[in-house]
Length: 507
Image 1 (cartoon, rainbow, N blue to C red):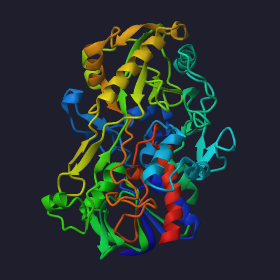
Image 2 (tube, one colour; image 1 turned 90 degrees about the vertical axis):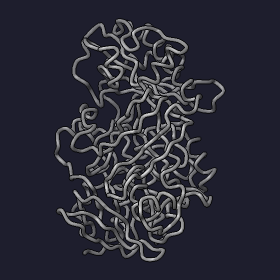
Image 3 (cartoon, rainbow, N blue to C red; image 1 turned 180 degrees about the vertical axis):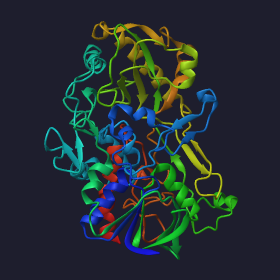
Image 4 (tube, helix red, strand yellow; image 1 turned 120 degrees about the horizontal axis):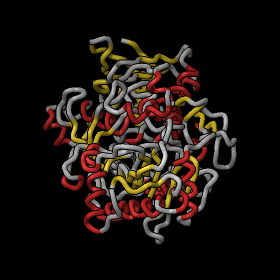
């Protein structure tokens, strides 16, 4: 048994950030990660190989449960199980969405407006363009753009202009509607994960203990206070104690599981599992949100695509499905080759030279849930995003597919486009809806399962403390009340930065 000031569970976007700032403040910190360290692993470091990591040695192996709305398909959810969490396995996109995203958070969680979040965003950044009113420089995370965009990425920028969208110098600038080169966590041609940026520089700190390959089983509660964790280490269960508290940063799937296994959650679920109720919190596992992705609109290519560059993409588009909307709700990215879920491959084949565009919905309305099915650690879960449950989501994704097909048929893609591959023709009506259901996948931006808020049903307070307990905070995507219109690495890093401030002030 060992004792620390704070124990941080999970080393992803939020966990790495909160650990770094607590260590810099002089606290004695243990960072406990379920997966291995992962430094120096070529398949992790090579930006072009991230797609192949799903269901591999560094992935949790989770899936979304099937529904009729996605034609009974199981949808995998890649989640990193390695130091750096999903930042060590993801597409390396650094994108924080629209200021209105965070102003909506502030409607239910005072203190989370964009203006109040911006300093933490800037503190995390080492942006290649240098510091500005909106961007940070000299922070832990290196952020770059492609020095030599792939032809598909370049064509998508030209295509955006042809479709009437503005071309942005920076999608994290004053506006995010339009086309832009992606902001990427790539440095010197290699992945730059949260572990690289936040943790590697402090690994030698005397007040940091890093414990890898150590899944956490539950949080120890002494009355209304969290005092430590039980975790596996070297094949046996061990206890680590926390003088001041525990910060859960295991992600929007594993954090609600840990809460339930610790007796914190809906009473009916705890009783069903035979777990004593320590704290009734019916919001645990509810409010699950994700961005649905159509994977993907595939096209025949006139020329071979060659070796992938950057993260296999390189640009992004943001636009509105309805001009009356206050912000862009649709998003697309290029793929320097084919991209398809197994059901699309089975139907269309997709042999030969191909490129693809992945359209998706960044302002989704559907909500789902996560349910723990057994009291066994790492036992089965029911994870249900309810993709396409709200008819507005299906309608918007159909418009996104039509937009992308219009774009690839235009002059910007004339040197690349040699016909539609999947779908193999223009579709409309029920046929188009059927393709969206067949190809519906995930951006793997799972969030919201232990939301913060000022109301009694919120799991966390706006200062990220678990409501009704002392010494237990959450610093990951599970606290997000309303999914932002972006990849989740940047928002969750910001959450981790702010969590460290709250913890140091409130512990």
